Length: 413
Image 1: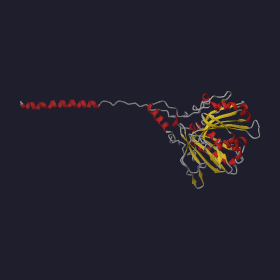
Image 2 (image 1 turned 90 degrees about the vertical axis):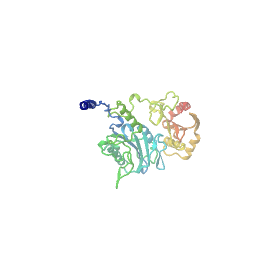
Image 3 (image 1 turned 180 degrees about the vertical axis):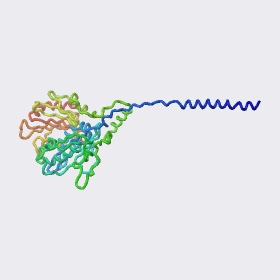
Image 4 (image 1 turned 30 degrees about the vertical axis):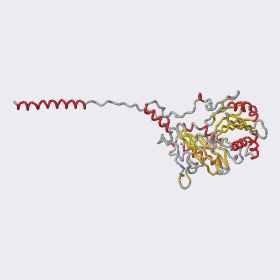
């Protein structure tokens, strides 16, 4: 009897084991869930392929030429081109070197680099741009000298050489143009746009004027221009974070050919004054040409011979600015005695709660159509000042005296 019970336990345990094994196998046969991911298919504009734009000024001196140059993504350069041009148009020279006190406050002094006089970092929403300031000895033929450099810059952005006058660049006005020392040849403005990928590696993008000299390539610092193989190069950190957030959320992004920082449309062209500046606009003052450097801009007087009024914040010492304005009115460098007289004759007044000085400078020849300047300097913090300046025909400046006085009285900053 006992033998029968022992043998009967074997099939019972076998059955339990089989049932358990089948349960495990059944669980392993279940398929894993399918996880789907949404990946953006459009490239953000700040990473998209984009043309390269170079803007530069060549300013002559007696024995040298000075180069002010910015090269970078077209949309980034578009955002600062007016400010840069206004800056180079008003560059002053002292003892043969440019006085850079008037550089916009948000342009930061860069590290020293070989073959450069100065460098500045300019932040834009698209890319940090590099402004290089450098010099070279002039050639006997100014035209050949300009053409050689402009055609080299054209090649850097993928354009062919130009056979046109100044290699398709243009002459420009600047504060030193009336000086006898610099008036023998014109200053030059360069603005070229192209595709760097068509030209091979750029030659010292943004660097010193010559990419190489006899004896080998120069060793000026690395360029800040973004190479095509590294679309992230030069992007501000907040722009990169915004890109990552857009990718994570699967948000729609701009198409590859869409500009990241487009020019204002025609409907957006109305000048917009700095919101920190409050004022009452005199009757008859019309909207003027705004730029990133200008806090407000107006035109006054007849359309065919109007005066331009601008408000900017910049550096520079009082005497140096007054002397420069006197030179613009009469041409050449004013005598120290004349500058002393102008400083002593300045009208003392209060503007925006601060002590200010107003200078009304007329040409000595008393020509009613000659250029006069009505300029007020309001000292601010950190060696900066507010400049309220009206430039135009002498008779228009005189007619707008009361309007300017009213404007100054209304200013709040």
